[in-house]
Every structure is written in structure tokens, then in C-alpha cells.
Picture (cartoon, rainbow, N blue to C red):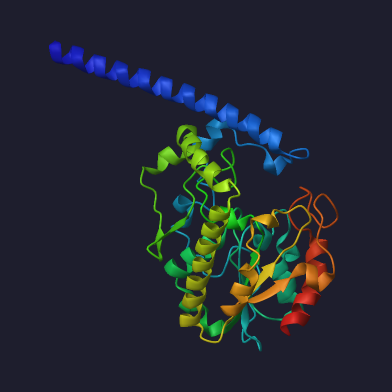
Length: 329
């Protein structure tokens, strides 16, 4: 009888703890939702609505998180682009975030598809929503890119936006109500990159209690201090260099292009004034969209898809001939 009583006490305490845990968790969820809505400069689109609290736990892990990404073996990319057998020109690999992937666009409206269509080159689009430079390195380190050798990869194009400089080490990205897993991140320690694998069971990265803790860590990184800017670029640069090295090991003659996507209002002040010269000196080819079209793009204009943020089909149609001419594709 005494054992039964002890068991009942233990079970009761566990239930009380769980109840308290999820009450606090739900309160934090509501706090993040309120904060998210305040931060939106325009009406929230259907695709950008905060995830429902219960759906957060029931749905699959966010596509750019470690939990979802570690089993990614799709060597031919994340977008449907027809493969040309016996293509006369070398192929192109594309990496980056939702800009590369082409969020809110059809398969045949993305930058990758338009380049394929105009150049008759094979294009493999590895862009992933809310992704960043670290996803490229993770893929190059864990996927069998040797399978692409028959397609003779000649170029790799990475689409850069200023947000990548702090996204590169953020634990909560894009924000606390739109992610339900652990972000892939690397850390520079003694000048060496280390993948930061989750230290807790996967479930905990869906809880808003843990998200609140990680959010506070990210808030410190978001502070625009000179030290943070140096640390962000150092990490960003090292990931780029190691990605370039891995690509050169597999495809010695491949050319690495960084497409610098320029928009009025972007937080370019987070960049270091010398970073583009450093990248050029390291062998990266920089294409600045402002230089090739004569202006910066504008949010909430025809330059954007329906959310007023991501590039539109019209924007990619404008850029593709300029990129082809610049690279002699």
C-alpha cells in the first residue's frame, strides 16, 4: 500500500508539473504572437500567419532545421527543373534561402528555372526557406555530390541578403512562432568550425519555453555592435571558405558566384565596409544587383511577390539577362 501511495504522489506531481509547464508555454506562445504581429509592417499574408499552438507540436519540423535537414538526400535539388541529358554546357548549383528557392513562385518562375530556360544548362536549386550559408556547408558535408559529376558543375551561385549575417548563428530563425525545431548552426572555436548539434531531445525545440531562452540569446547577437559585426562576418566568411573548398575538391574548375541582392531599407549597416573586397580577394565573384540594373529593389512594389518582401517573377526576368551577360553563360 505504501508503494502504491508513493507512485500516486509521483504521478500527481508529474501531472502538476506538466500542467504548469504547458500553461507557461502557452502564455509564452501568446506573447510571441503579439510581438510578431506588432513587428509586421504590413498586413500579414496567409502564408505568414503564426502557426497554431497545437499545430506547432503536431506538424513536421521546419524544413531548414537540423531535425528535418539531417535526412535530406535529394541530390538534385529542392525545385522541379527538368534535367537536360548530354547538355553542351556545364551545370549550375544554386544555394541560399527563400530567395533562391523562390517562395510564392511557381517552379517555372524561379531564378534557377529562368537561367536553365535561357542558357540550356542544368540548374540544381538547393535553396531552402529560412535557410542560410550554413545549410550549403551542411549539404556539401553530408550529401553525395559526386553524383553530379556527369553534369559537369561549372558554377555555384549563392544569393546573399544582409539578414544572412545574423541568421548565420541565430538559434531562432525566422522567429519564435514560425519555427519548431533546432536551427543548423556552426561555431568558430579556435579558428575551427564546429557544427552545433541539438543537445536536448528534439521535442524540446518545439516548446516556447526553450524558444524564449534561445530568443534571448539571439537578441544579444542582434545588437549592432562592432564586435558582433566582426564575429558575424568571421563566421560567415569561414563557412563560405569551407564550402568553396569542398566544392573545389569535387569540381576543381567550379566558379563561386555571390549574387548580392540589394533592396532599399535592408540593414546593410550590419555589413563591414571591407567585407566585399575581402571576399573578392578570396576568389569569390561578386555580382551586385544594384550595379547591373542601376537601382536598388523596393519592398512592397512590383519588385516583390504577393507578400511585399520576396522577389517577384518580374524581378527575376529583369535580372536573368544581366546575370547571363555578366557571367557569359
